[in-house]
Image (cartoon, rainbow, N blue to C red; front, side):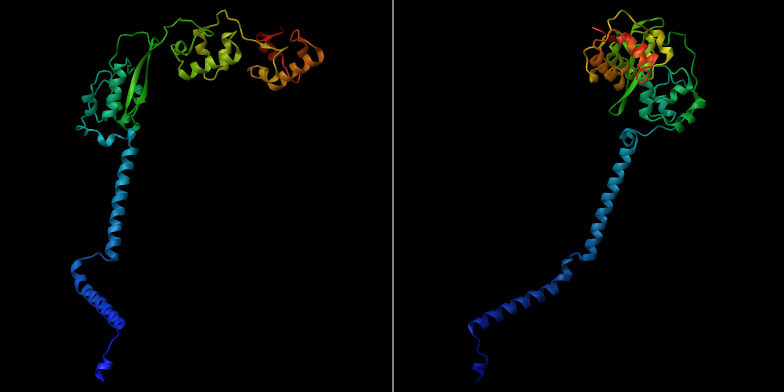
Length: 308
């Protein structure tokens, strides 16, 4: 009787064995877990938060470095103790400039400016040094003492600076002496930049406008170039030159309107006239085209049209 009750089939014995193994494993895990020190969810969240904070701190540090002028101030050597005293920016060396509280970057720019031939002729010139902020300049201004120097021509040279990497590069640019005359139709941008008051931008604009016009026939035409002032005209002359002209009997509307002195409606008037009346012999008929031309317009256009 009892043997029948305790009898298990092969399948039942297998299932019973598996269940016993599972129970043993679970019980073992309950007893061993306290000794494993595995982080629970709260510990994991704390570790994640710490990693996020560390990442944010590192990003903030990098941003602060990048936001400093030229991103290099954090690498500068510590400034020596500040000792304010009278100084001449034309003779003070980098050590003395650093003792006045200037950064290595600004001190380098001051010395580089002088080496390139520049000179501080007044206190305000010091404020124009690249990297000099207003608060630092106001602190230095009462101590600046500029020693007088023998007078010399101030229009023969000019010192220009440009950022190169983390430093400023200063170049001595030769300028023409007073009385020099430059042919505005022959000079290239390199020669034009030697005129005091003319830099790269104005030189390029003078050449560009010359190409659009077909050449200058009057030096006063330079006043039509942006940034050119009447004071600059004394440096220029118009030499003998053959102007490039608009052929009003052959050029199309688009070609004619490319000239600075001829607009769309004026070009259209030329085209319509030659279609109806034939060859254009002079500008006289266009004095009656009062909607398209003024007397001043015709005077400006006259040197630049050809009736061939």
